Length: 335
Image (spheres, rainbow, N blue to C red):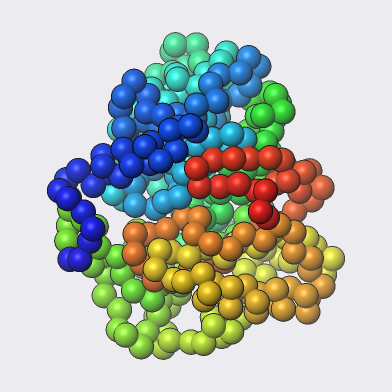
């Protein structure tokens, strides 16, 4: 294992300390606890709080979106492991201003179980909570069973829209409905070229031959839908877009935001080569692209590969996507 670390057991703690040292103007620990990251914007009367949580190792997801116009707090677990429900509960209580809290998280067993416990405990303290579970990975389950799909990079669009609605002082019911609407319009699929190494484990999460790629692999190394020989950038783009366009039922005249998301070890240059072909495919189909996102938004340590997300838009979702946001790892000023 070649990694720039000190003690693997302190990997999360030291990285979190570095984040707060770099972005202390925007975020802080809750009572000095690196397991809960808070926005420094503070509570606003009438504003719905937004909380997320998840395992470490996916930066910028999940904690990278804590900040102005997006998420108010994030509970942080170990690498690829859900945080304790007590940390989720502390995050919820820290951001509640009396208008309720919306919890947004990916569709993973540990996160679901722990958030349900945390919200139940908070309800006993008279904090009204709602949740939206993100299920955008089309490779992880058939469309008929979409509620079983994993949550991956598309969660960023859900954060963005919900955060904008909360900032405009929409009610908890309204913010939750907008988050649900955004979630049901995001579609993601990815490819993996190489594995990653969890520091405390010290060995690759899976094996793949040098001349192979895996379509549909999850961000924790979950099995995909097909292992194939390596393809060119255009072939990868065409293969993934065919699946996305069919699943999302994209039609001529539709408008979408496209996210090309590097998984950790794929250069931006290669991501833009893929975006080039994706843009051509959408233009040929008569689909307009609004606010493209190219870069690293939800990674898997040093895994090589990328995902493509299509976010189907209407005027309401476009306005929410356009609404200002500024976090340590995201701004829409450059979109």
